[in-house]
Length: 327
Image (cartoon, rainbow, N blue to C red; front, side, top):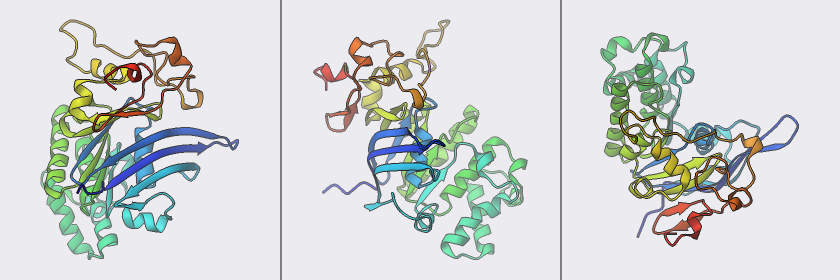
């Protein structure tokens, strides 16, 4: 008997209420699951809705947000919970690694105290013991001379070190679900590999479910067993990572793959998707990718394609894909 997924998101939609009272749709028709010990990659260009999705799962959307659909964590709904109930889950059962550690860290607290704070609040551990655990985490995050650096402030660290501290805060309480929002943004290749290695080790050792948010298909290909492709606030394709990358059915997914470094020959310009992600306030009629798609037909600008599941765990949103025998 297959166990229930740790996280289940069904028909999630998020809108933000504007100053004039109108609702601006940010996400729509988002569904996926993540099992214990599994890594799901969420990919898409900037403006696709990846960060909003992360904040929706952990309950950190602004007060002006309106949410519909369901988010179940360990079989229990997260949507509709009050702040007190959510605070008991955040950190202790669901951890979040923010995209920008400089903004996420408190400039007035030492890094050890910031790691220890969650241990004290959620476990009732004394500060001395919590600081000891914090220093052990800093050492595990490969912060050189962790004992000495424990009393440093965020501004005294490099970008890579600050990101490691952010990861340490997220891992301090050994959460069951870890959401990593672009955890390697702005890091050089060597530091990026070290950070991803730390995450991989933790997932494997603790059986943690990882929701890995990234614009980097190479990172997702390396770490995620399944992936979900977002564009302009909705899902475009999903499935086992090897299947999606090996045989993409949506032109947007194919465009992302073509733009990967190394896909073009030496001396040739790197491929790119023309145009930009449309404003959510001014989505085009029909398919949201219409106007940028090399496979566009007239019907694409008239009808928005419905999501179509096929195979064991695949899904796609594309009018042309739905007319082929493969779906």
